[in-house]
Length: 277
Length: 325
Figure 1 (cartoon, rainbow over the protein chains, first blue to last red):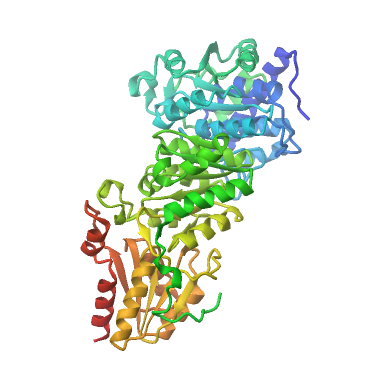
Figure 2: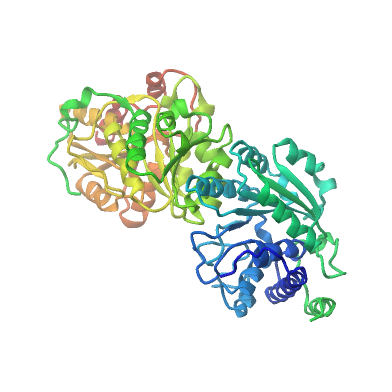
């Protein structure tokens, strides 16, 4: 069992995030397609969740007391698959089947094919509603489990996100903590050029959420925000994580073209060198 | 289920005068289910008075969730509740449930094969005065095309009540299509609904009408009229449109020269579509489709609209008489 621990080992979590990035790049290079930028930008958040905050049992994926993780930005499937593999849900060798025919590692997460995936995602804007429903169900049962949901920033252009934002506040879902991976880029370019989403913090506050604004690559800050969120009563928490698309690989960082492009063999070699492996 | 002894014209039970809207029967059935099972939760999108989920809301306020005017969020929330082990029933008008939230139903409910029950009211043109914007005539087509989905269109209040209890015991996504207006009781008192099993009132030697929803009543009346012309027309209540009861369908088509489908829905993709698809592959036969043809509804009383769109017993009888002569 991977239980939540009180005192986070930040250097260990940083190392987990590094390992996630290594696995993400390797599986994407092998698949020759997939979403590199947004998988790398959310690696620190996902590391903090899977290796520190969330209570879960890799050998019992349906354990009733587990905390739930909903990857609303389903195109970041590689970061979820890497976290599941490194947690022990399945053997890491499966990662090289990503996006290949017959693989449980579909291009976007599929819950009926891969244990550990709570719900199939990939069509943006739907995850927060699902997280709300789980949070409501857990509250009905008096469960102490918590629900975590990871959204992209471009994703918040979907109207359903704001319907869900209202619902979570209306039903006072304090057992829900969401993240926005605010890397500032979407497929067609900078979010601010495609469709303005700022001021993010004010918007979520106006919708009745507890909002924490952090550097999404500062592991101490991510951990502190997760711990703070747990203490808030009567409100859901949104952690706005300011991130860099492609984080960890200098030549991918801030490059919009690597939203949906996999690294070549050469790029993989250089990237792994930068990541120290 | 084998053929019952009820003959055409005697198909409607004694209690046939007892007309109730299927949405009212739904409201009552939800209450019964809520008392029986503590895992039942109900969601609505600001139409609980009209869909009749309001009764459940009053009895079990802690298990009722109004999502406001947000159908997409309602489907997602229902999905989450099912993931938390609850048995969610999500209701609104059919046009919004299946149209506005179609992609949520596809991507979340069906793709993940969740135990979510979608029970929509105000289907078809019998919505009446509100007009085309509120009259779903495409909903069965939209739901039928989805993998993992079961589609049920009850004919009366008695069947609706049974459907609600039956789908609670069945794992998987289900769409139930209900109406706003009152419909006479057509199913016999001893009728037992089973998912995927059609009910043949009678298999005719001259013609057979495969009907769903409120059109079962119209088809029974038409068969009675045809009897006076010496035409033996049978009626089958195909309340489960997906999966189709192909055994009864084959019996009906083999028994007679004329097969008709009858639905308060577009003939494209609905019951007429489903029957035609199956027969084209398995038993090529001409199918007369009674329903709405490439059109929208409009405002009017339910009775006026049924006439306008050719959905009355007279229309059915006329079409069959013409086909025979």
